[in-house]
Image 1: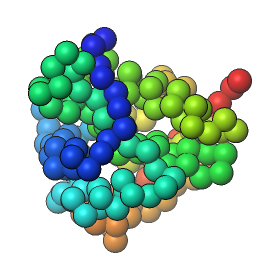
Image 2 (image 1 turned 45 degrees about the vertical axis):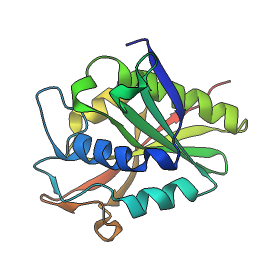
Image 3 (image 1 turned 30 degrees about the vertical axis):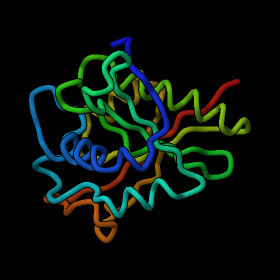
Image 4 (image 1 turned 90 degrees about the vertical axis):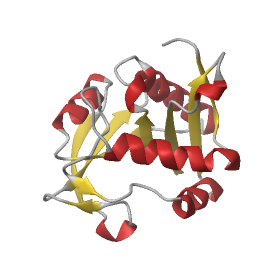
Length: 178
């Protein structure tokens, strides 16, 4: 998919983003890469959490829609959280109907490029992936990310869903080479 329009999310996107993120993470179809259905229950994000995220100074959230047809709705989103010389990539999803069409890869490349534009002294990208999502970990490995030895417990108290199985967050990193 080459006709993506990528931009910074704004307050008028909040309702559509909540729908997109919850749909992508909590429903499943044959093409779904982000679905956590069957391993996490409950909503992934609510309006209050998203508003809080958008107001943080070290966070940038980008959205994608169809360049020639923005009325089609949001196709995906990806977030960057800056911490000194590292940027964490998260809130990354693509609408189920648009998965397996290159939208996610374009979003990830765009986010990596924008991160370097925003903060010139970055040394690495990092992300946290549910350890049970081996196909997603393998995808990120193909994109240059490497699993680290660091693993966190699932953030039960963060109000991002209730794990239905024993889950951990696997940290993955990708060094930035100049």
